[in-house]
Length: 485
Image 1: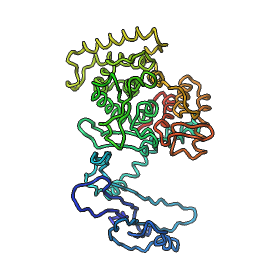
Image 2 (image 1 turned 180 degrees about the vertical axis):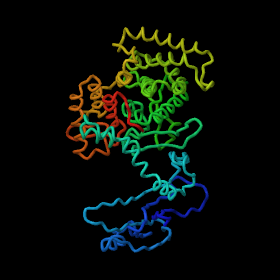
Image 3 (image 1 turned 90 degrees about the vertical axis):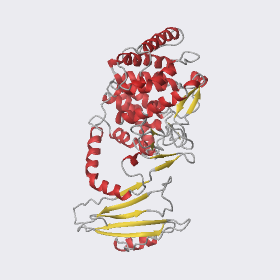
Image 4 (image 1 turned 135 degrees about the vertical axis):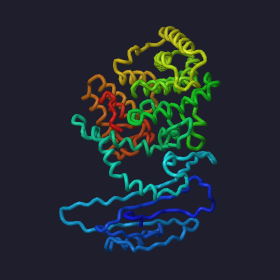
């Protein structure tokens, strides 16, 4: 009991001061006042049938109020329970808040490779803060709820959007916290921490550039600074591989079994020439973030420019539509930066702006030569519609290898719907997406959304980052006016 707060704290006996991965606390809690009765059972056998809890609770809604702090024996599983009892008059309602908090601040990847979690920037890095978190939640939960409702209101109250679309938009955001999510504490080079999502539960690579081409749009539209953090991590990875870019190109941020952000995945350049080009995808996503966040954050462009310049020095063996898109984008970025030097002098090239002007000249020469080999798309007027331009650039990069499955990619269907909506064909867009969402819900896939989905419910790669591509349609419908976050 802590004033009007009551709950159970789950802890463990620590034999050393150093905090190890997986160590910390949990807590369950509620409120105590004269209108309710609180009961607890601080220790019961979690591997049994639960009669210690149920026999009491089934009788009159109470628990035995038994406190037992005996630590678990090796291999033993223990649990705790709490209950709140109250009397409710006919026709009346009462809200009883329950809170679950946990503080496990250290995450481990390969043995010995650890990071602090992002929440440790706001609470002491001791693993002893579960009850502090409960107090914080009890104090601020009403404000949090109001802000969430305010943020969701433009979506769930939109008069022209069907209920199934409103529901799907909100529900798919579960992936941002349940998609194998990593969010580390801040560092000097990563001021908001490092952020990453898995491609899927079956493809355990973090942030592959192919999957995030459309799957990252929710992050970009709602929390653009986190999208920047991911792209800045790619920029550092590309610079670290600058001597090898003629052979391989970083294509994801690694796996949880190794050392994410340091040991990244790479794609042979020969594969990129034949199919998806991760270097082009990176350039386009950097420019897309810049355009859709107001086209003012030149510091972000400067952070990524050394990586972009390194990519441009290694043109593909044969011209491709994706590299055309990236080259046009690079010229646009170079033009912007040639007029706006970086606020960090360390990022300014020695020959400024001469180096950027030389890059523009070389890129234009490449485009002239490539025009004889590919059907180039006119992308010379980004200011007419920033979101439309972003979709055009992304579509040019989304080169598809020959189909190997009869199960269509979910992101492709959402992308096509976004294109229809962008051209004013909203009825056709709804008609394309509604059967997809219906199939997800009819087959129980709404909180394990796959990367690929067939009309009969067959699917591939559950909990997939690509499923967040439904937010591409949101962007097309709103002209990229994000909810107030």
